[in-house]
Image (cartoon, rainbow, N blue to C red; front, side, top):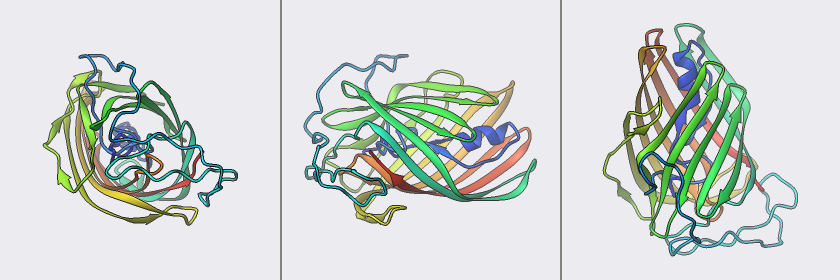
Length: 282
């Protein structure tokens, strides 16, 4: 994905481990900003050196024409360079989420037209995404370089506690120039109470995708599989996510995702399916 926008860890899964299974995904690399994840920050640190957007990326434009992405006065993005991607524009992005879940505690549940809000900001070449839903908040950091987008860290705050990991090494969520390929499997190692597991990313093809406002984008389709293992209240929890993500190089964020998740804990097994679409952008 220019994976920083596309890799995701499910808040829903963490909540499910606590007995509440609701939807909502958090991107490992950034659901609304890049497809994969990983960077070469120093061990145990999510701070990355300042640098200007390098070769493989093009500066986010400030065109004056309006677009049909669901918000007024939204500028039309400048097309990304061949094989590259524009870093995401700072501001607020909203996504529509629909899906269902099934857990031993709540039984089958369905939800429609729920909203996920993501606020993106950057310092140098490190982009932070603060995402909020009715189940909690999360903050993820990605680093954009001339050759890749790296997923540096994730921090999730929920009614059941705080879960975090600063990845060491950072996770590669996308490469430049982007092309169909399968990345070597990556380990979710690092410092924090939610580290452990594996990340598998495949770039499948480029195709058009339509957002919730009816605007069509040219996007790269990523297949992202994440297996996470951590401990909650002294008990082991394992979560699995199998997700298709459509990442737009022109706006540097994910436009659509379709995900299936499974979480197993002492409380039993919770499953979920969700579809998320970009609704508004800066």
